[in-house]
Image 1 (cartoon, helix red, strand yellow):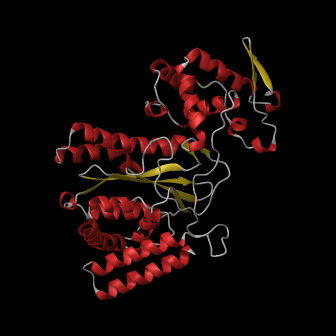
Image 2: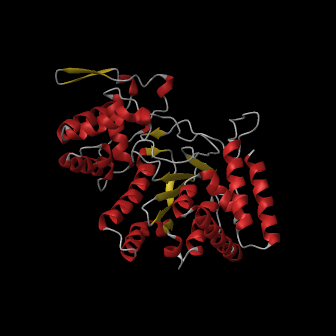
Image 3: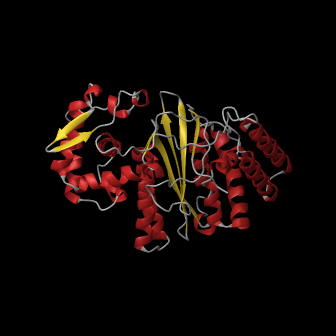
Length: 389
């Protein structure tokens, strides 16, 4: 069973040697072929959405199991491995690292035309790709800047997103996995699969179920009109510093009780460090949003120009003035590298790792590879599990 979540790794620099990349492409082609024959294209991309399985596939193809570069190189190797055989395999991979990630909509559109997909189906794929990137940059504010976005899909309309962000301050990278089967709501706990080296103490998680009221109030705030919303914003601008003044304010005839940010629980709160000085761009976006009156939080997020600061401003108004506290819990759940049998700092999900490796070994045995290569891969997989402990 695929768990929900995110993966975190140390940040790598440098480039993958050409000989290694070519080897990964060759092995990747064989692995994809056997998996598609055995389980089908839809199942292949479902497995890609599982971070532990994705990581073990990278290990099979000879990349370091705990390196952030595995994400970008593995995706590029798989994309190259199936080049020219996409329609036969029924798998299509768009996007990639840096500038390539921004070509994702164009690549999806191109495949939609080649496959004669209905225009609505192609638009839906492009929309899901775009929204996954927006959610992980604007709704999960964890300090990781998205720099890799890849979109896998099949002729049947199943899709998976694998994207990665970097935090240069902590020298770590974090990977986000999505799968169409898991997504019931694009803005409420949409991720598929969790493994993480570290969990953070201060993450604004607007996708959490616990943030339902924040999402609801944020939509209502823009629906009440720009003038009324700016009154609330002005309150935060006026009283963000010093926070000691934020006990009770009067707005017209209404007295508003504000949360006490002096409590130690809130001494790290984003409103303390938020820049509520005049921001013409923020005001411009809020005016546009209010004029269009989006009916849902998803439609609000989907609007052009709406990003992290807009969603954070609305969340802070909802919390500080109206008491709708969002989740500040990191959505990461399980340890990948630092868990242990003694549950320090938390338990290794051995069942998931064992299952992933057993399945991978079965595929390796059926692939058309030399016996010595199969032995090497199996040793790498055994080492991968040891490292996970």
